[in-house]
Structure formats: C-alpha cells, structure tokens
Image (cartoon, rainbow, N blue to C red):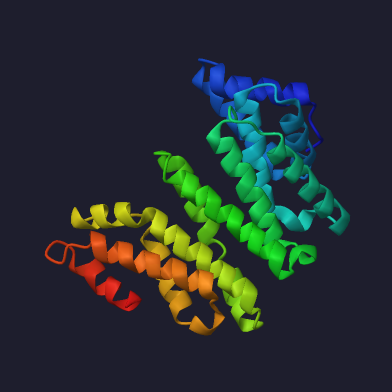
Length: 258
C-alpha cells in the first residue's frame, strides 16, 4: 500500500473509537491493521507520537512501534535502526506524569526489545540497561490491574526465550544472566495471581513464567548475583504463598527453587 497521509490515519483512528456504526469501525480496524503491517508504519507511528494529537492516536502509534520492533525490525537498515533507537529514547523522555500508562509501557517495551536485538547495543552495560527497563515496567505492572497490559507484557517477554537459548549456546554469559533476571522478575510479578488461580482449579496464563525460570535454573552457570538474588526472592514468595493442602501442583513446582 502507498503511504497514507496523517489526516487519513487520524480519520481512521477516530472512526475506530468514535464512530457508532459497527461496520465503519470494522472497516477502520482492518485498514489500520494493514497500515501497521506496512513498512510505512515506522514513519507514521513516529510522526503521530511527535504530534501527540490525542490519546487514541498516541496509543496506536506506541503499539505500532512495539509490534514492529518485535516482529519486523529486519525491514530497517542499520542506519534506520539507529535513528529508531534515538526516536524511541526521545519519545520516552518526552513523557510526563500525565502520560497514559499503556502508552509508556508500549514505548518502554519497544526500546527494551530494540536494545536486546541491536548488534550495536550488544555490550553488557547497554544490554543490562535494557533488562532494567523491562524489570521497571514489570514493577509498575504490579500497581496496574489491567489484564490486556499484563498479557501484552507477558507475551513480549516470553518471546525472548529463543534469544536466551542463543545467548547460552554462544556462551554470552552476561546476556544470559540478564534474560534470567527478567524471566524471574516476570514470575515474581504474576506469582500471587498464578497461585490464586491454581487454588481455584485453573491455570493462569503466566504459569509459563515459572517454567522459564526453571529453564534458567538448568543453566545456572550463566547467572550472575543479581539473577540469583531475584530467584531467591521468588522462591521466598512462593514458599510464603503456597498452601500445601490446596495446591499440590505448585507445591511440587516450588521444590525446584530450593
């Protein structure tokens, strides 16, 4: 598709959220989805974030940035990736206390994912900073009761599993340790909800986070003191929350952390 004008994008976003006609909403949703899939969406999202016209357009732009970084970074040249990095940093720095939390979350995830992928950001300190960014977002998540945001964060972080295995295979100890810390922080964030859900006979979608921690336990040589400390905290929380009479499955899982 040809690159649409910003006015056309604004009109489609307005139709998606404000038009009472369901057919028009569906039409706008499909069109915006095609825009997000196109290579033009990089520039469009950046411009929408710069203009800050309204909440819905900023959220669409931030969501587009996060999705494109996660799935389509290969569309960009090395020079464009560097420009993208600078733009994301500028957009995050421009946020205020009034910035909607989901928008900031999307931008932080986009930057963190970009930092973990960029070849020019593969030194330890920058990789560690990206991991710190993800952990900070997870801490904020504990204060926000929003399942959509929770699933978004969970899916984004668990998608890093293959990258973790590559770091281990290539003996990149510092990177593997950072991933281990992020996975453990993820498990800690959702731990109470996982246990409450299991006690009611259900499986919480974040149960996978505990399995990822166990994967990291199997590669204990690739964990630094921070990763081990976070896992110790997770184990302590697990021991505090577990009720052996009501949740045998999680009790058995907890044994792996001892």
